[in-house]
Image (cartoon, rainbow, N blue to C red):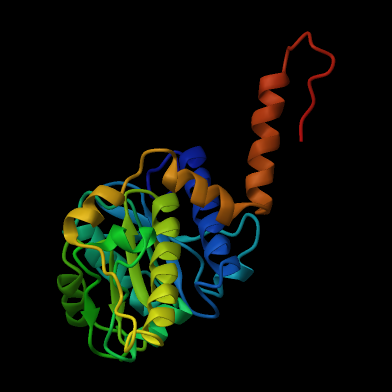
Length: 255
């Protein structure tokens, strides 16, 4: 067992998953030097990625186990308080991403958040909350206030300061972060024309009908965004090797 009491294989797998999610967010342009993601380990602890640019997190680089209640461990970034607060308030949440999606950020400086103008925007109905303060979140009281503003939504946008997205899985959290940014992209495009061509904003019932997970909606977006990650390739090879082990078929090969 690890010093935290987790099975080493389980903790290693969770570390790999967080690294893949971190690099995926970076490749999609949803973070730069700043940002972090995490996954819940159990009711009392979560694992956050290494405290450095997410796109530079290396294969095998470990994150840090953080308590849901209590002080942040040494070396953990101050805004990880946002993760703590979400995990504490929302037991259904399994993963959190604090990101800097550029078009979402631009829209937020108008004190606006993405509207439901197409499919991806419907996942945040009845509307993405706005935290109307551009300051960094470096105190527990601030984190509590931001997440109170978020409520039960999948996201909260912080004016001029990016966004926080939370979902049941890392894959869904990454996909929803991309959806948030795509909704902002469409909204900014529409704003340029809206004086003469009013936008067709989806009604709440339309959003609820459209925001489905059937048809591998989340899984396909995750596959698209995470394609090419070196540790996903390693997992695919390992799984293929186990499938081929003992096979009488001489054509069985690994990727």
